[in-house]
Length: 287
Length: 351
Image (cartoon, rainbow over all chains, first blue to last red; front, side, top):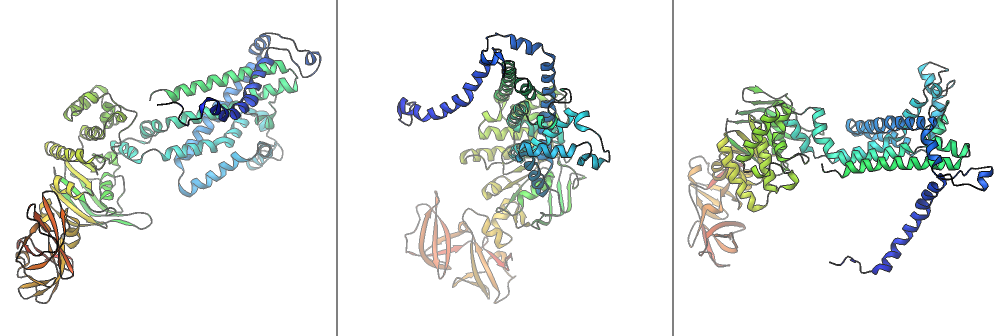
C-alpha cells in the first residue's frame, strides 16, 4: 500500500503541515532555545551586562545547583506538587467522583468548576479576603481574629488554595473514567466477596490506570509551573513559600539576573521533562 | 449444592416499576433451571436478586438451609457467569479463575493448583498464561465457567451465557454446558430469551411475563401443554395456532369449521362457551379431507419441512408438512389436528 493515501505529494502535504510547524517553532521552540542560550551568559536586565552580555559557560548552572535558596525552592515545589496536586487534587477529585451521586454530584461539580474557571487574579483576591488576619472570613468564622494564616502557614495556605482551585479537573476526569468501568466486573468482584478496597484494587484501578497516570502527569506539570501562589504570598514570608516559578520571577525580573534566571528555567524544563518521561514510561508499560 | 427457595419475592425499582411481583419458586438441589421470557419480563432481575446484586423489596430467598435475603452477594455462596463474562483484563487466565479463592484468602499454591485442575477440565491448559484479550469468545466463556467452578459455590447463576457466541459455537456450547452441569450436579439457574436454548438445556423452566411466572414445568410440558395463551404464543419456533371459537355440544366451532373437542378438554366445557382453540403447526397434518378446510396461501421452507399457511374463513392456520409433500399455492386443503395435542383455553387459561 502507498504511504501517500491522499495523493498530495510531498510538497503539497508539507504545505498543509507548515503553518502549524511555523507557529510551534516561533512560539515554543525558539523561546525555549533562547532561554537555554541566555542561561550560559551573564545577561542582566540593567547595567553593563545588559548592554554587552558575556559568555560564562556553565557558571549559572553551577551556582544555581549550589545555591541554598534554589535548593530550598525546589524542595518547596516538591511539597507543593505532592501536597496540592497528587494528594489534594487527585485523591480528593477521585473521592468526590466516586462517592457523590445524582443531584449532590451535579451541585458539587458546579461549585468546583466555578473555582476552576475563575481568573487567577479574582480567585487570589477572594482567598486573600478569606485568609486576611484581621477581617478575613475564615478568622471570623473560627472566632480567632488576628491569626496570620499566610505568615504562619504559607505552604499550607497555598497547598489548600491550589487543591481548591484544581480539584474540578481531576473530579471530572475520574468521573468520566469511572463511568467506563463495566458494572459486571464490579458485580463479579462483589459476588466473589471482594470488599470496597479490593474492588478498587482489582477492578477500578486497573481499568482507569491510564486515566490516573494522564491525570497525574497533567496536574503535576501544571502545579509545578504554577505562578498563582505568588499572588497570595509573594513567595514569603522570608522565602518560605518560594516555589520555583516564583523563584525564577524573583531572581530574573525583580533581581534582574536574566542569565541566571534562564539557567534556573532550563533546570525547571529538565525536571518537567524527567517527570513527563517517568509518567509516559508507566503509561506505555504493558499492563 | 443446595436448593433455592423463593417466597413472595417482590422487587420494586425506585420510580415504581414492579419488576417481580410476589414470586414463589422452588428449584430443587442439582436442577438445571431456565428462566425464559421476553425482554423486560423480570427474568434478569430475578437472577440478580438471587445473586444479591439487587435487594428484594419483599419476600425471602433461601439457598440450602440458609435465609440469604439480607446477605451481601459475597456471603451468599453463589457464583455467576455474566453475559459479557466479566473477566478481568489485567489478569491472566490462572489469576482470573483463582480470583474468588484469592478473595477468600486461599494460599497462593493451593489457588494455582485449583485453577490448573479446573482449567484442564475445561480444556484451557494451554491458555493459562494468556490475558482475556488474547482469547476467543468461546474460550473466554470457558474461563468464566472455570472461575465459577473453582468457587465450589452452592448454586450457579448464568445470565444469558450463550448470547455472546456466534451461532455455530452456541450449539456446541449448549451441549457442553448441559453435560457439564449434569456432571457437576450443582443447582444452576440460567436466564435466556432464546426459547430453543431453554427447551434444549433445562431440566425445568419458568416462563415469565411482566414480573409474573406464567408457567413452570419441564420443557416437554411447557411445549406440549402451555398453561395459557401467553406461553402458547411465546414458546415454539413456529407460533401456535390460536383460534377463537365457541363450544357447540360435543364439537367446537372454530373459524367456521367444526372440530371435535380435544381429549384434554373432554367433559369440561359447557355448551355455548367462548374458547380459544390452540394447536401447534407441528401437531396438525395436511390432508385432502379434514375438519379445518381452507385454501393454501403461503408455503415457507423450514429446511426439512414446510410451513403451510391455510386461509380458513378469516383466520390463518399454519401446518407443517414434511418435505416432498408440500402443496401448491391456491390449492384447497385441510388441516387435521392430533386429538391428544389440541388444547382449549378459556379466558386465556388452559382447560
